[in-house]
Structure formats: C-alpha cells, structure tokens
Image (tube, rainbow, N blue to C red):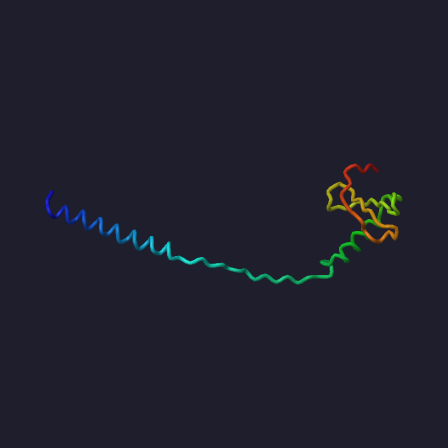
Length: 110
C-alpha cells in the first residue's frame, strides 16, 4: 500500500470515530422532558351522581313491571335504548327512590 491510501484509510477512520462520538454524546446527554396537556371540562348538571340516579329512576318509572322483593326491596324493569335490546333491572329500597343496584337483566322475558 502506498502512503496516500494509508492516510485516506486513517482519515476515514478518524472521521467515523468523530461522528460516532458526536452522535453518542448527544443521545447519552439527552434529558427527559414531560409534556402535560391542559384540559378543561365544563361540568353540567347531568354529571353528578345524584342527578344520574334520578334520571335512571325516572327512566325506570316508565316501567314494564314492578315487583316486591325480600328485605323490603322492590324490583323494577325498564327498557333503555342504549342497552341494545337488554332490559334494565333496578332494585330499590322500600321508599322506591333509593337505588340499591341496577344492571342489564339478560334473563328478562316480557
């Protein structure tokens, strides 16, 4: 090999070494940043638990059936379009206003 080829090979090696050093130091010294997205939500009167329960009870009052249950509770069944064909069963306490449990009743037969 002649001297020119050796110098060319050495200069390529040095150039590759310098570039890899630059790229590696940038990734090693990179700091972690956390970005937080600000989100504002305007709550309406339909967002409270009490209002949701009252709305559910109003829908169930358009009931298909009401039936007394043990332990001073009552069962109500009502059709709700959002349940896609299922009927909602709501179990209330003796005052028929306080909801004890509510769930889609898969075994309901009209």
